[in-house]
Image (cartoon, rainbow, N blue to C red; front, side, top):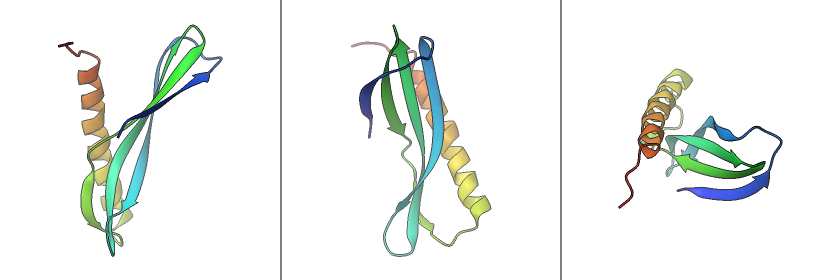
Length: 93
């Protein structure tokens, strides 16, 4: 899901991306792991915030080792980064 909002900022014009890990309940004893990118695009001192998430890996045992969950997150983040790069080179139809 993608969301956005406008905001005022003192940052220079440009694109800023911050990644975060999301653990989402997925039924009894399971979670989904996905990467979320918070993207701020700033033009003339006004920023628009977009949030984009990876598809995620679902059905992970909630008591899995943290190392495994972090590995899944890093894979999701890598995939999301690649998707963001593709978005930067879109073709309008």
